[in-house]
Length: 364
Image (tube, rainbow, N blue to C red):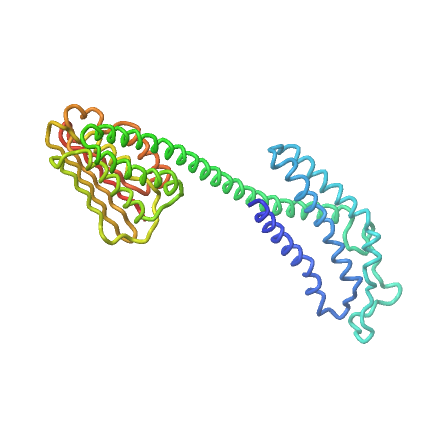
């Protein structure tokens, strides 16, 4: 992440300095008085700004500004600019050496030098560079601060992007950790309920108990291996739901109305595993009574971009205080929040002592 952003930032700087250094070439290319020394002079005038950029970009911003030592940064960058500007001005003899002689073409009368005695003297304090010490010195300082401002703004933008990306990665890692913990909570809770069901079957029908153990073994395989992935195919998830509901059927008589409606056609899309099993567990736990008529109705609907899950069961007096509570419902809510944020819709309705229903709408 940091390496990629660093390369992008350095590429921007490289392109900018290539453009800046190439400007004298294109500017002087059509000049009749073009010389290599004149080009070298223009490049030499760019040198102090490049030095200021290197000091600011490679040393001062990472060492002070990124560590929130703002006062120290301002002091050191100001000192650096003044020192570089002073050194550059002290090297004016280099500019004098590189500056070509101002000799006009001999065939151009308008550019011939005036006769002796009519030439204007060089004003005091001026040199072949055309600026006084103070003027050149101030110009270098002003332009250097502009270079520093641009460089610092670019670095802060990339720094902000890098921090936001780190926060996003940490957030995803945190979500994955929480989801893993929630799945680990689902498995024991699920198996505890299922083993209780099988225990109840042992005294009723040993054959049904054996069949339940086989089904439970298949479900364990799914829970231990398939469900540990981030997403699972809808086909596999629905097979798991069917097996679980069939396991529940073995425990109850035909007087308990259990309906499971899953479309024959299932879209070839993957979804996070075990999203609805907590609601189904909850319905069988709180919606079944051995004394009163009971029912659990489960319906799935799918489109290419949408999944709809509905479950309804009656609530009996001995369970009515716990229908909308427990580890299962809490885990289901937490997982949905972590995975979908505000992109899902969960509606839980309860008519006390009578009906409990859940409607879940998910994007695919």
